[in-house]
Image (cartoon, rainbow, N blue to C red; front, side, top):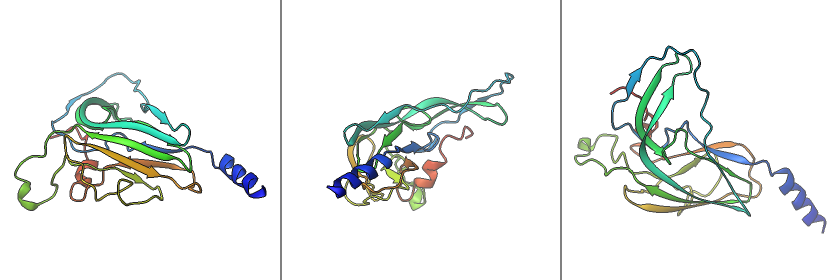
Length: 198
């Protein structure tokens, strides 16, 4: 009985939700077109856009994420410059949705790759290659890297739907974590997506 009470206390104290956040929305990939730039003269610039929040219920966060190219507006918080970009996103937004789960929960994601087909002629064997092939890495979580969990070796080709199931240990520390694609040979290229220049 004491063990049950102790486990309940640990669970209650460990209930601080930890967040798996999209990296400022530039999570999936690369820019396919040059962004238009314009100078703003207005001194009031919008703050950081708050992403949609999806929370677990009864031990599971079941959601769908669509990776697709979408138009977005970015504002440089120092210069006030506004840039219009078309860049790969999760669900069309920068940043992508915030996923809130608790220790002991399961993160169940249907990941739909709605990005264009990979280009032919893969740069003569040089990187990046297969820039629209994705997977999902929950950066910072101490979870299984195998199977359909946090497996950076998975290859989710354009036009496919893939199930991701991440089981979070009951004793996992709370924190702010983030998710992103982690395909070998293209991950750095995908991270630098969103720059408005050619």
